[in-house]
Image 1 (tube, rainbow, N blue to C red):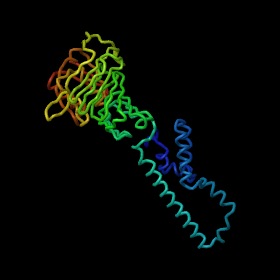
Image 2 (image 1 turned 45 degrees about the vertical axis):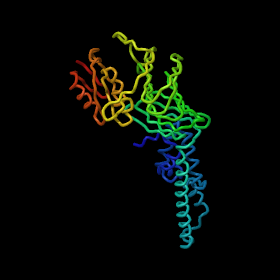
Image 3 (image 1 turned 30 degrees about the vertical axis):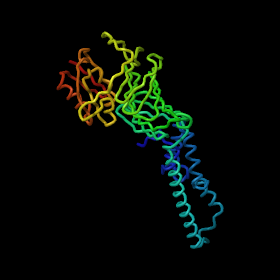
Image 4 (image 1 turned 60 degrees about the vertical axis):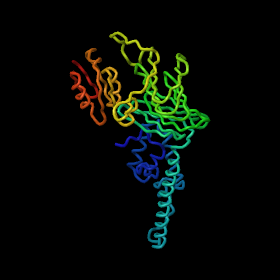
Length: 354
């Protein structure tokens, strides 16, 4: 079944059943779309725009059924219509159809082609668990958006400024523009760049947020003002540890691990020159000497599952591993070869016990 919940006017316009609904040529199509419109009031403006475009492209012709009713009142008896007149009528209809198809094609070509250029519209890009997206911004910058993340840009982006807001994780390859610094805002820190490549990880439900610089130069500052302005050089990573309660996280029963509020280190480089912090951009999970509790969130977002530990001791198990095309079942089986544990998968629920 086609999901039309995210259709725009052009998507409706190329739907053959919608065309028949607008033209009034098919009773079933008319009944279906009338019910659809009533059932989806949130799409009425989009559908109204699609109908308007249809009538513009069809030369503002009224629905065919109405045209036929009007024609019946004025039409001459069939016996009096000459063969020549009949042929001319069909030639006109064929010509009109060809023109309509050509105009529709040209409209879609010229209206959709500039979509990656300056649109002067606010936009929000989102990904679900297990999903990743590549986004080209109006200034030419490229963003890889990791699972369960949201990237927002304002309508003034690349007009008066270049500012985006991020919840989750993204890799930025920013086009240089000395007159318009590129700014990334998160709940924990803000980043300023001119043209560079870096990774930002700022999930609201995780105990820390981090930024890793691959090339270029960035400056960043904590939202709460602590730590002053930090300048990162290539290969450096800054981590902000949260002091506020984590969203949707129950109160910890185990003793809380004390971290510095801000720490600066180098990114983790392993075999074949892979950077652990950006391995996800190559469709890989790189786990490097991390405990089970630390990689839990990575596995949940990558495989669209929820993991629950039945024993706190299991959370301390440490692993080093690489996953790419493995299923969640295959990944857990591989981890079992390092540390013994049991697991049970029910739907998207994963229960891990000793």
